Length: 268
Ligand SMILES: C[S@@+](CC[C@H](N)C(=O)[O-])C[C@H]1O[C@@H](n2cnc3c(N)ncnc32)[C@H](O)[C@@H]1O
Image (tube, rainbow, N blue to C red; front, side, top):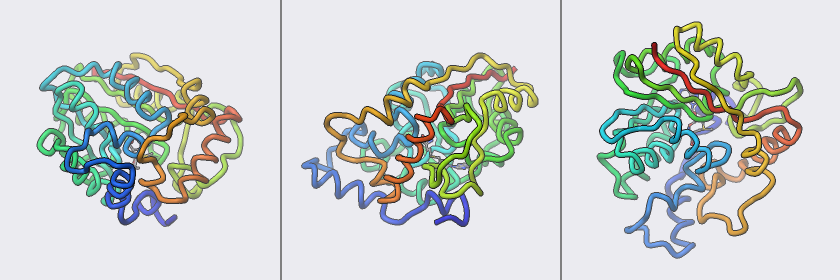
């Protein structure tokens, strides 16, 4: 489980576990609302609330083309497609996640509205200027070369297009406990202060529009679990090891070591 970034995330039976949990909770899996997957398919701090923060900055219009980099099993991509009418493409390094993204999209009747591809944020499989906007949620912590990452996000986005990054950033010096949700070991873990992302963006010619720190949302997310848990959770996505990862992320948040920051850039 620790030999690469993909090995940390990839695992067998994701869709089967999610479907079984929905059946156990009494859902008719032939008639599912995509929202029912939110507990498992929004793998970032704040879950849906984090996605809504991203959506409000992206401000997409129907028909626009959005790329979601490191889309996981596609929750953000599906939400943004159905709530805005934009055409959304998701790309992710982990083949098992992309397979699950396609299957879950078909399961909730959204096939044709969102498409997915395997690929890396540092070598995106798209032509220059392919998208009106680009987003990336909780992915940069796996990427050492922030300049190359920013350069690729900028390359595939059209002039005047918006790039929104929502990542876990380092906010204080200290030892992070592992496993973390994004890496089992320090070897594939590269969280950095938001200022490093902003410098990398500047290096590739992006205009920095603004950044907002969502530490309060992180405190709420880790310390105030919902009174009634959703039918599916990140445990169905990642398996039993998710418990320890989540606990460790909560410890790091409570110690003030990490915080989720939303950064907005524009292609000049
Ligand atoms: C914590 S999950 C976030 C998934 C999704 N963005 C979300 O918010 O639900 C991190 C994701 O980044 C992907 N990832 C990590 N490094 C990547 C890279 N270099 N290129 C593309 N995807 C990557 C992983 O496969 C995983 O799906």
